[in-house]
Length: 88
Image (cartoon, rainbow, N blue to C red; front, side, top):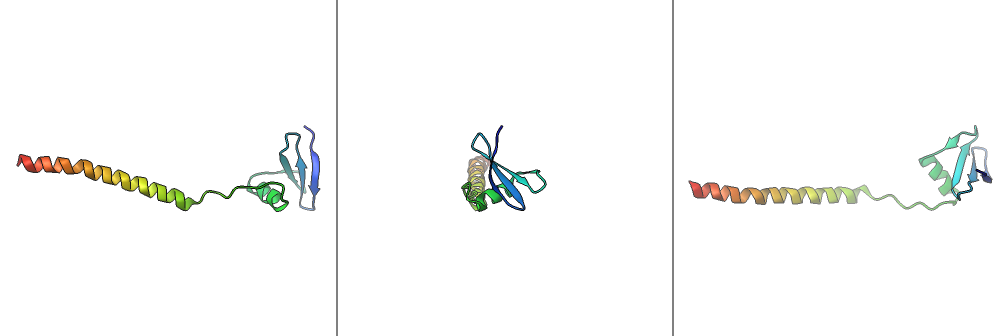
């Protein structure tokens, strides 16, 4: 796989791979991956990353589903209580 050097700094080197993706290596020629790689590529304007989904929205969805489940459980208990009252 041939890689073309895109940019070289004192801290890292950025290469473009034959599959049009980027590879980043640090000064010791070790690969850089994960969040650090994304930060470097964003800083060099080589990629555009979407903003991560806000956890607040996920928490709100979880709360709604929990509330709905609680309401369903309460609704299921009410007829049972009415039937018990009728039996007495």
